[in-house]
Structures are given as structure tokens and as C-alpha cells.
Length: 424
Figure 1 (cartoon, rainbow, N blue to C red):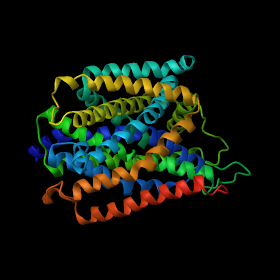
Figure 2 (spheres, helix red, strand yellow; figure 1 turned 90 degrees about the vertical axis):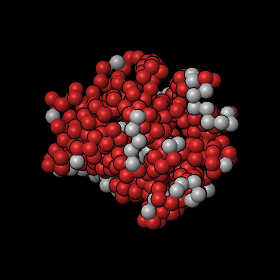
Figure 3 (cartoon, one colour; figure 1 turned 45 degrees about the vertical axis):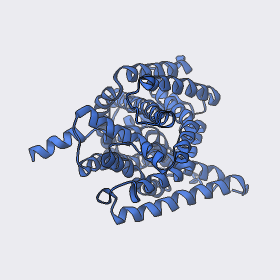
């Protein structure tokens, strides 16, 4: 028993990092908005998105453990076209994703320290701090920070949730009419909600990279079962918290006649108020600090994930051999962090102070490209690229087929309703 616990302790890390990354915008913002604006109407879609995306994130973890390489290396084995396509997908979405996460994080930072007057400079400072931390500490700094952050947020969220259940939902204001989901705006939000629920599938590669990095950090190679326990723990936490945030939004906001603000700082204040009105005013500073902390953990993970992915793609495309230690690319990780920060700031300037538009655009793009990566990940673990004893069980393969149909179906539905049927 003691040996098993020691092995799990050395394995645990990437799953918690995954959870922290997911809990950010998709939970604090999108899940809360879903409950606040539509009540429990979208709860089923949140559950389905978590269920049908599960295999494709699990496969990234499975592939990393079984092969000792990331799924990005796997895309190269599928064919150079797959690696180039992944590069295109990454570069097409990364600035919008990072900008959206940075924008939300800046709002929680301004709310915590009451520094609204800094405006866009809050994001500049935030990006600068992330760049400095990752340039010096890389994975070890990220891993240690996240475990503390996630623990605090989970504890405060569960407390708010049980108190909200105890107090019951608010009474709707007189004349309140629930909004329709099957409208152009409703469908757009639904796709945006599922786009980052719990995370965009295209960043499943991050988990495989973090799994490999954890093995290097601890000098310990876990069994496949142990790696999957770490992943499943993180995924379970993100899925349950997504449901909880929808319920919190529904219980505390739905029918109140209030709208969640479109300004990032005001939105952050409203979300923190959501917690403190349930738990008590004494908890304001704790909730404000934990909410900012989890968003800060998310933005650091986003910077690390994209930079680490681009570093590996560059190595595979430009050098024939496996040159992970090649001196030419030793500084590329830091270079990509700077590029990511600069490009994301340009996006923030373009969207101005429109929080919802920026987030909805970024999450919708993630959903529309999800089927491609889902197919790639499924191909890597169900064919010649993985040994038979490491391949997923039959039920998971069946769930994969259903998930791919689900993702493609909703992507087509969105495109049709968005561009060809103006009556919605």
C-alpha cells in the first residue's frame, strides 16, 4: 500500500495541471453564464460535451505513457500533412485563446487589487509576469504552483455550492421570461460553451507533453494504469466543477433580471459576489484571491502549453532526427512565449473591452476545429501506432465514434444555421 501511494505521488501532476487549465474560462465564465442566462437548460449539453470529449484527452495521456513521446510526435507518424495541419490549427487559434484567458485573468486581478485604472496595462503586466516565471522555472514552477491553487478553489466552490443548495434558488422577478436557446444568439453561445468544455481538444497535446515532462522531472516512469488514474482524477474534477458552476449560476442569477457584465473587471466582481453572497461577506478576499489564482494558473498553463507545442512542432518539421537537445532550439521555448504574448495583446486591442465577444469567438473556433484533432488522436491509439496491450478498451472506442459524430454534427449544424438560415 505504501509503495502504491509513493508511485501515485510521483505520477500525480499533469492531471491537476489539466484541471487547473480547464477550470479557468470554461468554468468561471462560460459555465456561470450558462446557468445565469439559461438556468438548467444547457446543463445536459455541458455533461454531453465532457462525456464525448473524454476519449480524445485520455488518448493523449495514454499515448504519452505507452510511447514516451507526445501526440505531436504521433501526428508526424500519421503523415507530415497531419503535423502541418496541427501547426496551422495551433497558430490560427492560439492568439485568440491566450487573449481570451488573459483578458479574464486581468479582470480578476483588477477585482482583487482594485486597480481598474490600469486598463490594458493590467494584461501587459500579467503577460510579463507569466513570461518571467516560465522563462526561469518552466514545468517545475508550474507544477508546484497549480497544486495549491486548485485545492483552494475546489474547497471554496464546494462550500458555495452546498450553501446555495441549502438556501435554494432565487425567486424570479415578476414578468421574467426564460430566453430561447434555438435562436442565432443562443446557438452561437451553445457552440461557444461546448468549445471549451472542459478544454479545446486541440490542446490535448499539452497533457501528453506535461506527462512526459513529469516523468523527466521525477525520473520515474509510471505504469499506464497510474498515468490514467492521474488523468481521470483531473478530468473528473473538471467535469463535476463544470456542473457545479452551471448550478451556481442558475441558483443565484437566473430569473433575477440582472445580466452578467461584459466588462472583464465588472464580470470578475460579479462572479466573486456570486460566491460571497452565498458564503458570507467575510469570504470576499478568500474567494477573490482563489478566483484570480486559478485564472493565473490557467494563463501560465496556456503560455507553457502553446510554447511547448510550438517548440516540438518546430523540432519535428525542421530537423530530421529527434533533436530535443539541439542547441539551435534551446531558446525557442522562450521565443515562442514572447511571440504568443505580443500576438495576444494585439488581439486584445482589437476586441477592446468586449469580454463576451472575445471569449465566444475563441471558444467557437476551438469547437469547429475539434473534430480534426479528435480523429487524429483516435487514429493514434486504435491502429498501428500503438501496441495492442496499450490500446483503449472497446467501450472507449465506441464512445470515440459517438463523440466524433457529436462534434462533426454540431459543427455542421452551427455552420448551416450561422451562414445559410438567417431566420434563426
